[in-house]
Image (cartoon, rainbow, N blue to C red; front, side, top):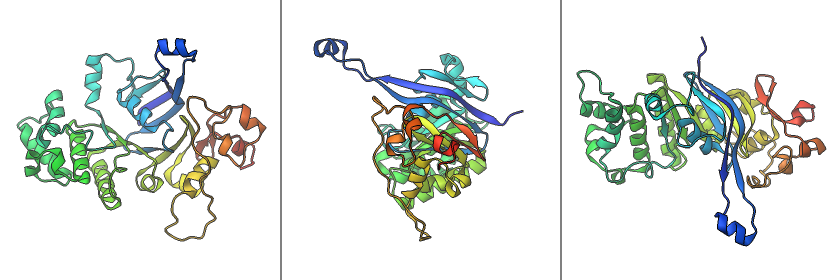
Length: 330
């Protein structure tokens, strides 16, 4: 028996960002397609935290929305506990939905401002009929509020009456009310102060231990990922360039892009290690570079990197997509 909960295979998502048809005809303009996710594959095991990291525009949030079914894939498949999500009808997907939840980046935008907090948290309980036998819905909401560090009377308040960290606690309570096994966390602390970030991250780790949760954790902040992740996947322009165990990735990064990201993390321990500032910026996904997308910024790029696209290949304890690593030039 496998412990795999999420299996993503050759996942791609292309968006049509063209002007309206008539404008294209009048202006003699071509159709434009944006490839946000390009042939991505990874697995997430039960009870672990798999993190996706990368700069803005690398496709992290798109993958999150694909996995929870907010948008459909252009190609590839996503299987949750052996069941392919994209092929499910509305009735079958409803049965899966309670087991798979999402915490969004902006807690204020993701909470209905016209609803009291108790109604926001109770909505999944009502929809999925999840109140325990002999337990009222209100009692369940009070328990969830206390679980995330709030109090029962807070249920009578509206979202605008809370701070950013408290609103994110409400969002976490709403996700937990569906009794999920798997939660997608799309940069859940990026909109919060640093001190509040630590509180939310510690809460999420405690909840994972208490309820046996599995996380897909998305972030651009490697210091946050280091605190949370069991395994890490590094995304660049919609493609995975490296997957490794959390400790291994930080101690022995393989891909030049991973090394660049780690060099940008402040050296709080003042270890005196040699650092190299991040150079350049992520290319336009509508018109990506040929070959390896990272080659315009890579100090190790050669002619092969400019014409061929590397694929993920086993390298030690992880996987890396880099010709320089493959050829021993890294």
